[in-house]
Amino acid sequence: MIPLGGVVSTQNVKVESYPSKTYRLDVSTGQVVGTVDNIEAVKQAVFKILSTERYRHPIYSFNYGFEMDGLIGMDPLLLRSELQRRIQEALLQDDRITRIDDMQIEISGDNAVATFTVITKYGDFQATKGVMGSV
Image (cartoon, rainbow, N blue to C red; front, side):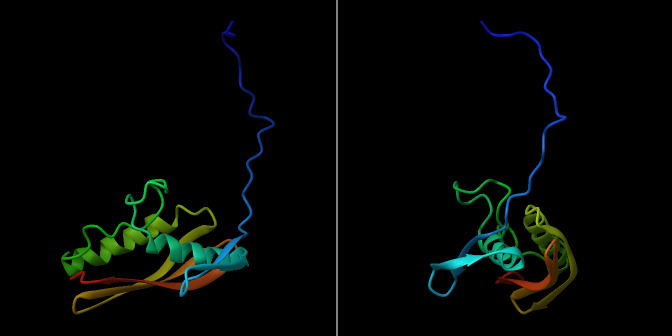
């Protein structure tokens, strides 16, 4: 018999943040070489998020990754705002990142490079994202 009705109490629900400790990835070899924690883990997460094409890999949720599709061949004025929006949207999915500041986008020939400050609960750091053949 299935009980009918009932009330779910939220008084004892405690929301926890998971620890940031994770494996350290050597990007030059693709090997796992130890572990990282705190701001170094967030730096690695930023690299991985911006290097993963969003919606392309079924192992990741649709909230994970950077959406490159449609940027190549875009008008430079539209590219500036769209690149900024997509970087912020991708990185702010990580709850350790509180905001993205000081976004500077340089367009030279067919390439665009965004430089920005990532503000995290562990500290701040600079990051870049390049888009080749975008203009």
